Length: 490
Image (cartoon, rainbow, N blue to C red):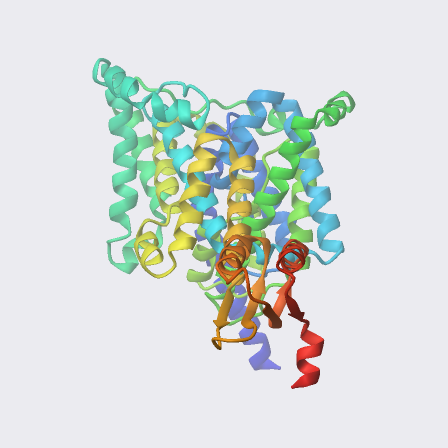
């Protein structure tokens, strides 16, 4: 009994210190994601609080931490721009309810069937769009809008920066933030007790305050004032097909990112593994509450989750407490946010954008699985050129076509004894993707001699191939050996 109590006390002590680490990691990311999404900074904190106090309590994955994610920044910004901030609550609420329904129907595990190359391509595309947009914030300017417009305007942005001292100061502040975060990881372990993003934003804030730098800072309205539950009239926008498409995109991306994060976190510890259906319902409950509060959508975030595991967390107490610390900060020190330069937060998100791109993995993937690398690059490019939803759909479609092509192997063996019928044997998977090859091989057979077409080796024959083979056999007037007849004669 004493040993059990001592073990519990040790776990709680470790979870307490872990929660402080996660809080320090989450604070600048919550604020940065909100600002980049075009919403009040407090809404990012609200989502982080809900991620701790609501989702953190629920079963699913005991160690991963939820909150606003950089992966949804582009989608949120687009939704707010097109439909307005009041519609965001409706979108997030609907997303949460759908996630709850999917989890209740035990469909959470189906998200694990999404091609990994599509997920990596999705994250890479998000990273590209995020970087292209945040480069403008880094310089204190407003981004043109879409991913392609942001990328196309980078040359003009560089010229404008060189012509403006204020823009140069802002860029230097943001670049310094990125440099600190990059170098912080190279310091000895004890020096990394404080998270790099917090140190970098803190240093930029201190420099801005000490030298009174003429750069923009975070605008603060107050925690209570930022909460704007959707009004009854806002639900009328659900009749808009574009809004419904946005909800589907939110659901797909938020669910996939959360469950893939859970799979990654499971590999980092030896404790209980994730129940994917329950985790999806936990995410749905959190997004439902966020929607009712008019806050940002949430996902499980690998950066905070890995920090939680690395800090030694053992139970869900750590992630719940991190929500408590966010709530206390938002309630007691909201004015501290107004001292943070937006260029520093842009630096944090640019750094996060680079981490979303699998730069080191792309080379080996190209050498070993070229098709997967193509799917990844096409998905990322499609997101940059079109939008998040269409880009992911293009990636999924390409992955399905690739899988169908690779699994539809077919072998055609022709034996010509010199006299009598020519024997043609088709084995493998005969699908419409391989139909041109099959017909080319059959059309090269002698037209003036009978052909025995043996299909006994086929493991799959789709309707298109069956109809084409029957048509060819009727035209050639050949004797077709059916699989059942061949097995019987054998």
